[in-house]
Structures are given as C-alpha cells and as structure tokens.
Image (cartoon, rainbow, N blue to C red):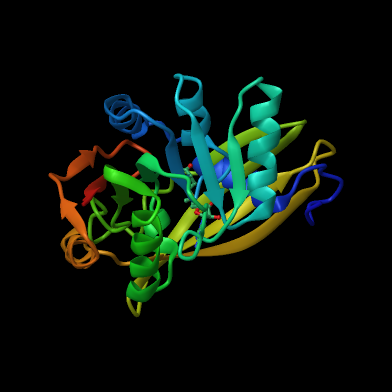
Length: 250
Ligand SMILES: C[S@@+](CC[C@H](N)C(=O)[O-])C[C@H]1O[C@@H](n2cnc3c(N)ncnc32)[C@H](O)[C@@H]1O
C-alpha cells in the first residue's frame, strides 16, 4: 500500500501509470518486430505492461521482467483480469537467469536501458539478454534524449500527464531538465487530488543516463551482437522521439 491517503493502490504503480501508460507512439514498432519473429517475446523493464499486454492481445507469448515487485504484481493482476496469460517476474535485467528459456525477440521500450546507471550496467544487461536469445534473435532498445526538440530558451514544454482513477485525479508535470554527470535529471511535480478534494503534492526526480546509440552499438558488437539498422519512433506533442537500436544475437 502506498503513502497516498486512503488510495487503495501502490504509489509506484499509480505514478508509473500516470507518466507512462498513455504513450502509444512506439506500439506499432514493437508489434511489427514481434510479428517478424516466431517464439516468445521478452519485455525488459515491462512496468505495468503497456507493451507486454499489447503484444499478448495480438497473439504473442510474453515474458515480462521488472525490478519493481509492485509493478510486476500490478501487471500480473491486469493480465488475469483480462483473461491473458503471461509470465511476469521480478528481476534485474542486468543479472537475470531464466535457465533454458530462449526468445526470438527482446524489447526494452521507453528508455529502460537509460535507467541502468552506467556503461557497466548496460553491458551486463546486454550480456544477460544475449544469453537468453535464440541464435538470430533480436534485442531492440529505445533510447531518447530528453533535451531533443526543446528550444534552448524553453526549460520544458509544460504538458502534464493526467489520469483519473477511482475518483482520484493525478497530474504529473515536468518542470525541469538538468544535465548532471552522464545523465539528465527530469524533475516532475506530482499532484494527487483525493475524491474529497484534498491535494497531495510531491516532487520526483527521474535520472536518465545519457546513452548514445553508437556507443551502445559498439558495446553490443564486442559482446557478440551484430548491429542492425536503427529505427526511429517519431516524437509526439507530449513525448520526445526515440532511436531504436537493433541488435542480432550471433
Ligand atoms: C520508463 S519505465 C518503462 C516501462 C515499460 N517498458 C513501458 O514502456 O511502458 C522503466 C521501467 O524499467 C524498470 N527498471 C529500471 N531498472 C531496471 C532493472 N535494472 N531491471 C529491471 N527493470 C528495471 C522500472 O521499474 C520501470 O518499470
């Protein structure tokens, strides 16, 4: 149970949904990649299942990993509620071991690889995923630069993410972008308005590592991947675009 007054939901789940669940610009890309490859899909850093549930609903078997047990629990509950079968596991993508299980496609949507803290963390994840891909299997990783498209004189376009649930209204507004060593801190003000009108306010800082696609591709090549042509997820009014690095396990 989270700290929000009387809200029967976990804070992590609520704010994850507010800030991530409405994003749709990349779904067609993951769907297209999954359609090209037989076999189950591995969703890395799956959160509450924005991509995993989308792919299962289109007939793909999905194993979803996330390091946050609250998000994994919410994902498993949602899948059951929709009558969908998936494997959802709490695991760190830098060190997971699924035994003999192998995948034709692994996806890391929405900057998951920018939350691993260092090049050593990213290389550990590349190696762990490689060990779980079939020969010729593909790992696709979305990378974004939060500063992209933001004019120099503007701190950040003030577009809040808003969601209503169980009589509550949640609003998360990006209020600042700050470059720190090797990363960008995204500062958000989070407001939750209870059904009785009580307002809860908090500040969140999300640290996204700066990861250049070419740098990740070089590290992957040294670990036994063949680098495929990159793809692009276009920016939308509310979200920056992403470069999608594609790597084939050899
Ligand atoms: C921006 S969210 C994206 C969620 C989901 N992939 C989507 O596109 O909607 C990043 C997710 O990565 C997870 N994550 C961060 N570091 C992780 C790690 N080392 N291992 C597994 N999951 C991780 C977070 O818990 C969070 O759910």
